[in-house]
Length: 328
Image (cartoon, rainbow, N blue to C red):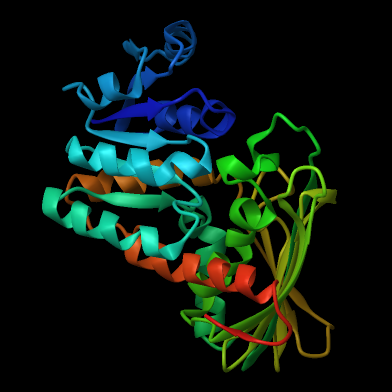
């Protein structure tokens, strides 16, 4: 059984990843660390973890941990991923791994030197609904893909929330802009060549709170908008010459809406609906990661892919400062 350690008591861990680790068939939750030992102990007791630590370094030194999950504030991801690798631990780190693509290659070099598995936690690529989308596009179900359209938004104006704190890596693009980009890249196997963007920032927080983005993939275009201060919405549509594919709950499947992919024909007179009841993408993620860390052949989201995805986000930020296209 793969023995997990978790750095921090962050909400995403409490609500999604820790339950997934407890339910996983090939892993156990071994330890939790927090700068406040009482918080670590309380969360460890809640999920049945035998070990609790009052510092992240203590957990990294533990022989009872094979790999760690890092849901710290974004600005701390690179630092603690490097420390975990140095400690010889496998690492699953929350997205976004970095705030600049140039910070990832040193982690690749360190990963290779220590011979450990390091992955950015994009749970969507493990969900069968996205594997189905990729399969449908590859098999020509919608003919030539011409346009991908997406949206991801929620409303959060809490100044204490890290998503509204610029120094912690907050903002819509780092938090949710990564999803339309990664799901499009995953589904099509293509990379964008250039981007255009309009970006609005909060006058108090300084974080990006709204973006409208256009990405040129050569064979098709991707357009999407994001916001941290709009009513909640998420959708992805892949529109081809022979039909289109709509993913109804693309990023929070089973929470925002049902796990459902719809394939519509050319004249919109017929639709096939693909459902994936009971799928838990976080559990699928941690199980795949554990198998890969133990020598399995599961496909995981590599650091090389993280570089490519972050390059897109970096280019979008640059595009937001100018008129016209920005090369990725």
